Length: 123
Image (cartoon, rainbow, N blue to C red; front, top):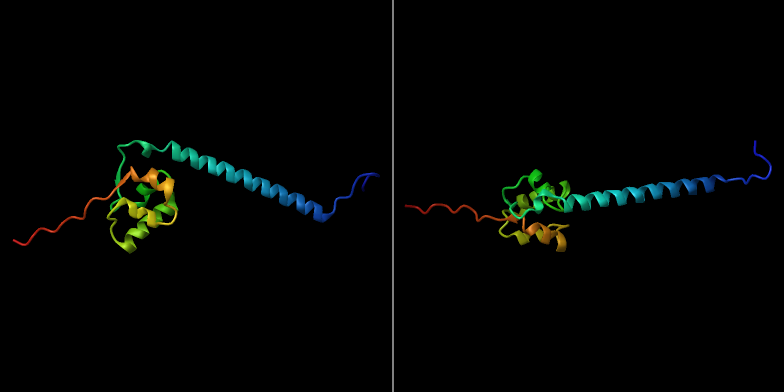
């Protein structure tokens, strides 16, 4: 029973409030995830200058450890290598969706491409 003078809340109003709470929770989650990714990028062990991997030999797990590269991007790099052939320059990474500008700048000091093994000349 309602007490006299208490406002009635419609079902529509309750749904709107519930949706507002859900949206707020989602926004908070996105902010927390973004903050985590930023810290992961900044604190990455790969920030040291002496960590360099060969794009043609690196596994998905190794690529995943590079700054700004997660599981999906690591998979995309390996898939690019499998479909397009060996990388000839690190700049080819920019052909992969999601690797442009600042992300490429952060990556390029940690990747290299060794020339393909040349076949011995016939004797």
